[in-house]
Length: 416
Image (cartoon, rainbow, N blue to C red; front, side, top):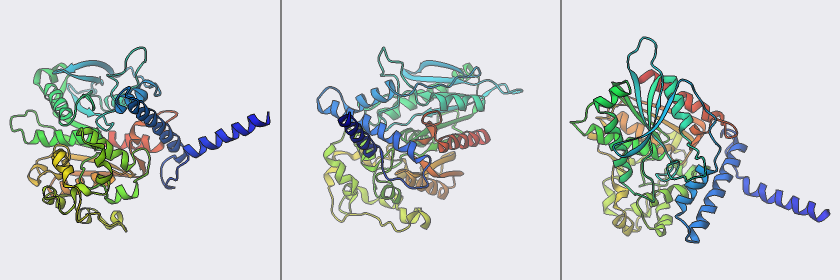
């Protein structure tokens, strides 16, 4: 009996040691976040073991775990019709809200989910599992509260495809939706269509927005873009938010850099060098012209830069850019786009979270867009963390998740 108690106490202590991580006092629901982070870390470690054993790619394994064994959604609505179909060969899930009284057409929103270009799609989950779709609740809420049609694009994921195939998928699906006969089928007003996405989905939405404004033949035009804690650049992994939140759940810096390397089918040996900006050091000529476009000492206010110093090595590893030139492509890093492209963009909403390595990507993009004359709404949450908007129902119901979702939907309602 005594030995059993000792063993139990040891197991509890080990579990507490694994779960507990120091968190800023201002972050929303810290103990829930610790438990969520521990669960996600555990899933990552299992998927890495599966990869090491040669059984499957770690991202396929991780996606299977989080989709197959996650909490099943509890949302339901008599006012939203949900249909799985494809737009020009790209899988989509369409959420159709009801018409508002007195209106003959609905608003439309293209939504692009996050997940490091590799996770959160349920399309690869085999029987007998009932897959979780982490974005159904969000998309259904937007469709219902805005009486809108929301198209959630199930673009192909890493490692099945790599950059820029994800962009091609969302462009094909969106162009299909914008056809007059398709808009008519879904009763969507061609003058009230927006694009949106979170995290890697925000990256793809920003890239799509830049691509579409340069297409003179594209009709109708996108009315607005809404970017939720978007990832927008891979040149500087030492912005103040990357330094401040390097180990913060649920997206530490090391994991974000690995997602970038995976997106480009790059070499994992480069990850540590990229973390200290050796890929954009002063001796890497290819990056020289782009550094000014994300000079955070001028793009961010003193309240953000604080005591942090830029990390710009004199010498680095030029081989990284030579082998992964996509790092400097504006289609992967919309923050470094030309000013002439930015000034063509529509009204923009950018949501950022304080406890997120990507915070400054969003803040810098807002500043560059404002300088280009774009109408920008910056919505910052001091207690927010990366990914919080999809965590709105028990047991992963975070107060900041509910508030970010409500704020996002309110802005869409007022502007779309």
